[in-house]
Amino acid sequence: MNLILVPGFWLDASAWDAVTPTLVAAGHTVHPLTLPGLASVDDDRAGITLADHVAAVVGAVDALPADAEVVLVGHSAGGGLVYAASDARPGRITRMVYVDSGPLGDGQALDADLPPEVVDHVLPDWGEIEDESLVDLTDELRAEFRDRAVPQPGGTVRDAYRLSDDLSRRDVPTTVIASEMPAAVLRDLMDQGHPFVAELAKHTDYEIVDLPTGHWPMFTRPEDLGEAIVAALAR
Image 1: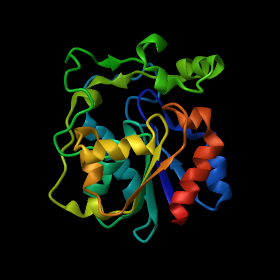
Image 2: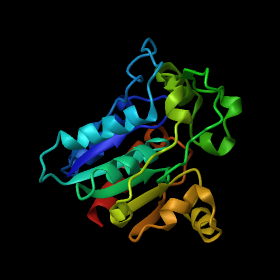
Image 3: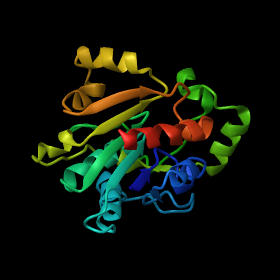
Image 4: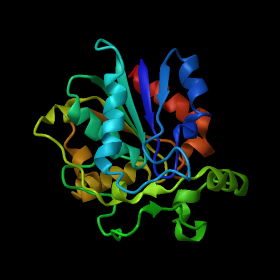
């Protein structure tokens, strides 16, 4: 299968480097993405929108043969991007995999209140990030992450997702790999109708599997993450 790997905030395609060997060894072809504005700290991020990031994922889908089996894998904020891409290309996606993330519905934004003057949304200090997110992220890994981090274009944080009326995206077989928040907690939130998981609750074919660690399993448990993705594709 062809796996399009979409990183979350502050990361480029190299975020998947330690995960891809397991995927390739299982016979899959990987296509890790670097999204617009995230190739370098020197990039001009003014004017880059959420639609630009969705278009980059859609473009990666379109670059593959029409008969290719395409799997979209999104980490964190990348989850909303891959979901929007599946909405834009109904019938092209074989499976969705969300890594400590999930689908966002039409009209939802990651942080609509981010001030409009923020062009470069930088990686916060560690003290500003919840402890649960930092589980297993050692001092060495934090330093490596900090060194490689690129500011997130502010527009991609503020903008709301716009999805079409083609709801076939909810029928695509879906796996959520839960790391920071256990599967049992996610299911409880779904039962409560929490907006964080409202779109996932509308899916017809999904599973939630646990991979206990912090929010960045590609750094803290890369081989295990690769194996979890491979298992999802074999389902």
